[in-house]
Image (cartoon, rainbow over the protein chains, first blue to last red):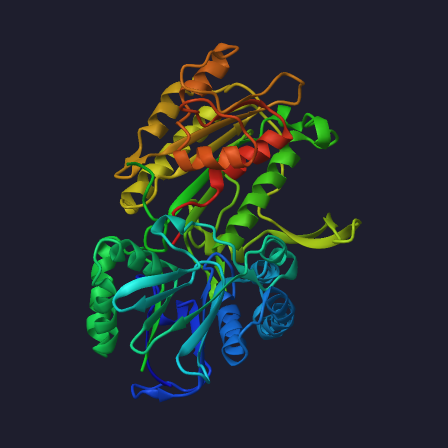
Length: 255
Length: 279
């Protein structure tokens, strides 16, 4: 299986690079050359800016789930408990003030999307995605958006999505109300996938419904490799109808 | 549409609390907080709100100055009850509030142990000002001080979300009619809308409370009528928070509560200070 993988991220306008709170990780190293693998995983997370040490939580999640994608809701529940201990150990030395300590005690929150694509022994390709929250996967087949997961319409995005927390008690709703979504499918050569955090995902869905060539436009932005141009495009869109938030996009094309 | 401005470090918003510290605030709160004086209950409630707002603005790298804060007490004197000698008596950035409590107390709270039982947990409670109750009710003086502070602040922050003033009192002003002063406060305006004025009247009697009544509602007496007329309308976001905390609202609810008990004071504080448009 040959994959072209592109990735781009940009912090919200008015914030520094250090304040970027999304995270993503790959199961193996990625460069501008096509990647050869029988299986490949991307994990992406969007740390909730209202919570503290959300960036650290997002990074811990993607590092683990890129190497071992979650199998099901129970697996995600058990592993997030262990990862929360990692998080607590990492941030404890940083909590020297009363307010940092109390904010950290509330836990960190993040969305999570894990996407794995495999070559089938019998030919063709299959994929599997697991999601909590509003980081989205778009599957483009012959120019058409054939899957939008876990959200399908711009109206599905809300100000308070259900997120995965570093505090176990805050995760009760995630696991008791079946907020872990799983989708599987097949794909062909030249199919494309986009993983996007919420602001750019909502923007993508809004414009895709109005302009069928939008996924190709997105792809060409990423493929151009001219970061300053893409930065300028994102900044322009933020003056229009792209919500001012961290932007993270990973795109894959199957060859 | 008003009250849409994004709250950010570049364009912070502000909260200014005016608190009655007259002699009658020594009376007991009644109800669930029966043994506590109104002044102690209110000081605790506002110290708690300051703590919550500090935590809301806390990030791993420090406190983001989304808000400037002030508390003016009126009783024996009219004066800010939180001051910072490096900044003076104006509104104080929340990062400075965070770093400078008077003291941090250890208090107990009951929490659910997750197994059907209750645990007593020790928690840190920062205190920025202590309760006091003495003298008359120079509300007019406090309102005029607020008007001066906010006029200057709005001049320095022209693109910000409008300031929110919350006036807590248990009685009538003793230094003159506050009507003109209250009107002056709500006439301070930004491009995003005028200052939002809340009037919260606290009672330790069992009189029926009036909470966020609609424009045009009839009030039980001229004093209630004065405070009611001088209160702003709840923004749509604040109205949604009010419904979330269990309030039933009519059309065009006002930022006004009369004969509030402890529960209603706490809800009013939540409705008035829940952050919106925070970047």
